Image (cartoon, rainbow, N blue to C red; front, top):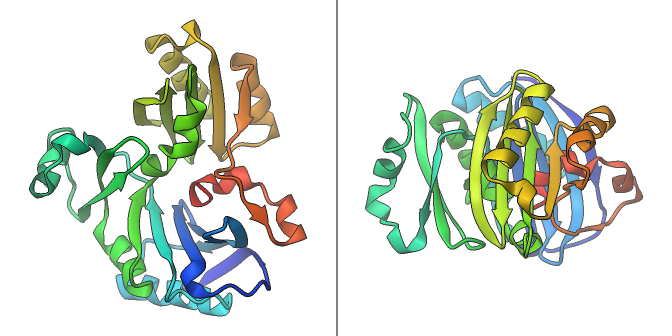
Length: 275
């Protein structure tokens, strides 16, 4: 299996492995990754083009080779996570969660297709578990290549302490634009109001869903801030501002950029691995 490292910016700063975090996010044509420290320094960011629809052993070998070729060690880390795109998920409050019922929770809201595994993660920002499905073979390839890898989904990353805190006494709409689909999260007064994925064949579809959510949830009745990340560019951002005047790019948590070249990286495209 072949791959191409399209982007790689790496710091020479010496940091012990147990103070590093590795975050990998799957994309439609490969994956992106970041290395940060427990002190919120951005040490490395990369973008890799490869086919994910291959034999598990081939993908596992490629993942190992990508990091070896990049000179990045993937063992002894403080944390390592794999962020997958999932439109099949359900939030379960901590007080109601039963580990033995994971699959039952998901079965109640959607069909689990063949080849899909069921995964779960706890979200401390809202004190709830998110149960979701993802391709088993794909996840296994990454977990074998990088032992200790934790599996998360995009909605889990979008619901974080930063977003919850910013919704104090107002409404906050966060949009993650992707190819053919977009993810939406709504917070009001530090509470999660909505978390969903919609099919979007065009950018007009993405705007339509944002406007529809605003109307359905009566977000226009209170101060509303809109944040956007993912596949956004200057033209699309300008279109969004026509409908949502108070809109900003979301780049994840506040990080110290250790290399001058990182200043030119569109961090909003990598928000899920920087949150």
